[in-house]
Length: 443
Image 1: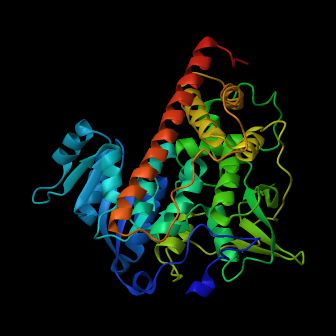
Image 2: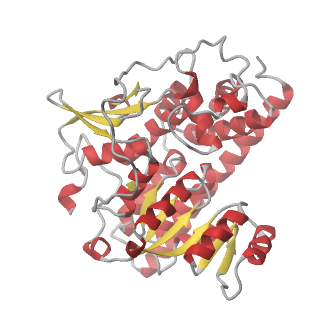
Image 3: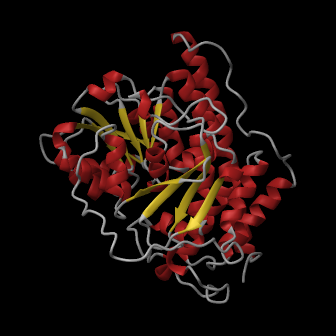
């Protein structure tokens, strides 16, 4: 099925990984690990599994602290391994499991990474929220897994690293984000005749509002997305348009497309999930009902296309409209573009500052309009000490695909780079919380 794969190695599109091998494509049921099974994406993924239970063997499930829901999921699917954040969560989970069922329970970042490398499962859905998802994604890539990637932050933080590891281990990335899954489908069998990638954005709950309108926005208002049912963090990112900024960076790493060839259009109806513009000016669009089960199933079942209980799209329901994003009211998109252009760790800083600012907003520790201000302040502080226009992750050592001894060196080097990212991420979060405490971003 390589002919269905987006272009590789060319000047227009250079996809982050090669296609899955025939063994994975033709083997059913597929062993599956879900990192972040209790979140919105994880629950939707298990709904896909429920639609086609003969196609999957659930080998591992992981969450942070939602152990009650994880226990229910585990009781239904009986995976051999579970993972949670810490020992306290593990103890609570163990007490909730049905008698006669004793899976191995792993904890912490190391536990998530171990779950991602289970030999029984070649397919790993990386759906943990935020920067916490990098450890699992990287572990899966180092183990040569088929990674259904819903954690966009893995590429925002370490896209260069993930690409290099995939090239060395044969790991595969299938994009779960609805926008990138749409582009992936439009690029099937294509690549080098592409002019632009066009990401669509709903505009969130505040499209068309002025800065004055947003001055006193509450978390409850920001969490009410008009089209999608999502978790709290991604809902706030959608409201600020930071989610689209993260997706621009994700597109750069997934498709190897120059940043200036990645465009964003606001499309309030969320019917067209993204488009690809070809050199002759024509455009290919992927349309569908706004339900993440479709994109998840496209990855988990690739290259098969099977129904998952989503109602078909009704094109007569509403007119389709498009307009340019308002960068004056929603500056997060441009902050992300600037971070991608300057590099030097700025994408790590921007993502960490955003996650910290969103947490503060949800806790009542800052205003909605403070989110981009805190991010910009963190980026300015980083720029004062770090040069731009360089990759934060230095190239991995070159050579032929690693022998067993070489794998140890590859893993060591990748983990060293990941630790650098983790340290900068932590420093940036601390800075944002300090700025908020000091009142330097207050409206």
